[in-house]
Amino acid sequence: MCLRLKFTGQDGSLRVEPRPALRHTNDMFDFLHDKIDGALKKIRGRGILHASDVESVMKEVRTALLEADVNFKVAKDFCARVTEQAVGESVLKSLTPDQQIIKLVHEELKRTMGDQFADLDLHSSPPVVIMLAGLQGSGKTTTASKLARLLRDTYKRSPLLVPADIYRPAAIDQLKTLGKNLNIPVFDTQPGDKPVDIAIRARDFASKNMCDVMIIDTAGRLQIDTDLMDELKHISAAVMPTETLLVADAMTGQEAVNVAQGFDQTLSLTGLILTKLDGDARGGAALSMRAVTGKPIKFIGTGEKSDALEAFHPERMASRILGMGDVLTLIEKAVEQVSLEDSVALEKKLKKDQFTFEEFLDQLKMIKRMGSISSLMGMIPGLNKIAKQVDPEKQEAELKRIEAIILSMTPQERRNHEILDGSRRRRIALGSGTKVEDVNKLVKQFVEMRKVMKQLMKMGPGGLGGLFGGGGGGPLGGLGNFGGMFGKR
Image (cartoon, rainbow, N blue to C red; front, top):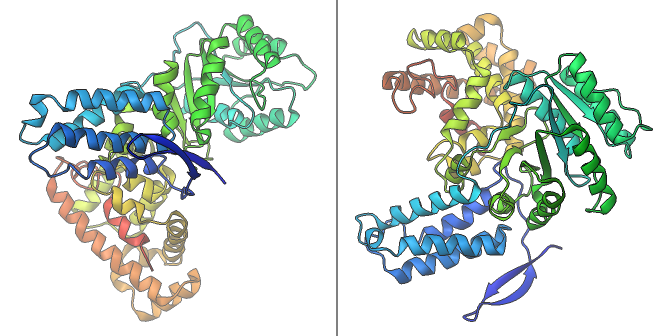
């Protein structure tokens, strides 16, 4: 059973109590959002606030931060800075003091996490060397492959993966397999090789084979020890990495901060990658890392798939914590999946009322590649609470059900849903392993979606209309309306 320290009583004394189990969530900051949102609710909508009101709310915010595994000093300093600004005359006597304080919290969250995205430094002479360090089990090997894919697809680089964990032959084989699956070259490391020699030979190999970036997957330990640090120092001295990134498991909470400090003292880290943020991470490590170590979080791992590595944008993350959505990330995800030509073609079909089950199936497949419906809805302002009501497992099953139903239709039926009479629906249900009621429900929802998309088209390119189906051929084709498909059956 996990334990936590909790502040209680007027004297601020501590007591130990069991920590409640954290439900699995698609959004790594759901726990933190719920806690801070609960504290700020007390001032929302109030036209008059006193200094005592602010201090009371910020005490609750501090408790929320501590329960989310934020470092104690970081939480204390965070609340002190917000309180100092919030009790000023300009805030308390403004027309909307509650909004002013929420804005201050947002700004402080952003500042604590680093203000802006810290990109990779790829300006050195090729091959640019990126060394990944971290404890055993932090996810270095899978992160190395994800980073290589990101460098190839987003940065348009030619990466080389270098397995340097000679103590775990399985790690070498794993990286070779991951590289093969992604069609990314992997240096042919043998278990008997020395890590420093591997790094030097890999650099020569990269130069001869036109690989402009090499990613070294180093060995880990269950804990920091002298032998590990000496090995990492020797590798670093031999190949002079431009980036030395610590891969840290976010689920370890405050311990991840201690690990980062330990590695930084030896290696002078240039940045951090937080992994396993799709699990039971409470978000506290992300808030603490930058403040305690002074090193920026550059990327976050949000799943097991090879594309589940995202750039860490403090401002966007601050907005998500406060339930303000993250439209910029949503747009970026959409742009990655939809070409301009496809978007324009979809817009023309929408204008001509030619959106059929074929286009609907294409949109579903595209959205599945972007991530879960609930995680995408959570990025849209105002849909955060609805997104939490969506069960990820039921959502996945429902997507498969919808896809099976559409694939059981003939091409003619997909292009013209109006010909779907009773006998056709019975045949489709039989072919897809579903019930006639399921087919009827899907057709009804599809018709409703077409109506919504017509309305969005009339909105023009302004606001969210362009993103969700209006002017510009919105690549998400009415995502907001998908939410209703995944509720209770």
